[in-house]
Length: 423
Image 1 (cartoon, rainbow, N blue to C red):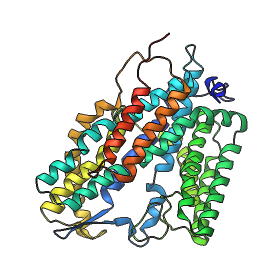
Image 2 (image 1 turned 90 degrees about the vertical axis):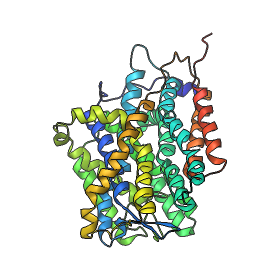
Image 3 (image 1 turned 180 degrees about the vertical axis):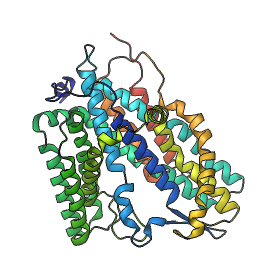
């Protein structure tokens, strides 16, 4: 495998984009904006003086249909697949071709480096706030959820690490690769629901998200055609699966639901993802004509910071408004709920702005004279970074040894991508 992956991927049958694609940039920025908007909008918060309870505004009957568009993780993975293909194939086809391990080392540094300031703040913060008399239960909720949202990075790291090999499969087998991944997702759900073992469903973390990621390769080559058919087929299949299958209508997890389409992802999520990709590509001509260049130039270098810090901003506002002042969230859909949006979002943006100013600089890792990377070291680095992110996803930043072990793993992975002496 080392010999296979060290060779550059063969030239694609269709021309790969030679510069940044504004459509992919727009999907990434709009996707992140919708994620933040949804996370800031859907919590229904109540504090009784002892415990903070969190509900979900999208659990309102009939509102689940909104999640077929607002759950944009499929588009984020699709855009990531296109960006990875464009970046890797362009580097492999350049005069100074970048070996696959070196390409992976750059991606690992860009994914892991912004996590260090998050850990530097959140590891001591619960202890400091507890010593100041902040109630333990609301603080634990915030510390755990901050880490749980890192699941996306853990899965995306798998996609990035697999990109060189996935591109070779794509070049050799084409559409058979996403079809095989979709078939594996079908078999996984059949095994899950027939056996009652939900743990089996976590195989779809790879099958579902890698299938959508693989579609980005076709877009990068200009081979993703008949987008309208993909949109109709995807959303139509999702409607059939929800109507006649064991799948809930919502594409996000809801309190009290027996089945979630997100944790783990299901075949219904894959179908909605296909529909979203088809719809987005179909609308591409109109989307790229929008005057978004300045917005993309500003938001692009801050996407990771927004993702990592938008929930801490929410917890800061919640701590003051809900826990300290005792103002609970109004009933979703009520007049007070809509009327309170400007104030709520204003407070969140007020907290988020200095976080963006302070931490966006960490999206660019230190520029160092990195040496030649090998596959063994880079796979070990990916394993350490992935293990660190997964540890934070499972346990969050709640007090204990988990966050320290996670940071040690992140640092170990970064050290494996450090400069090496050329022999």
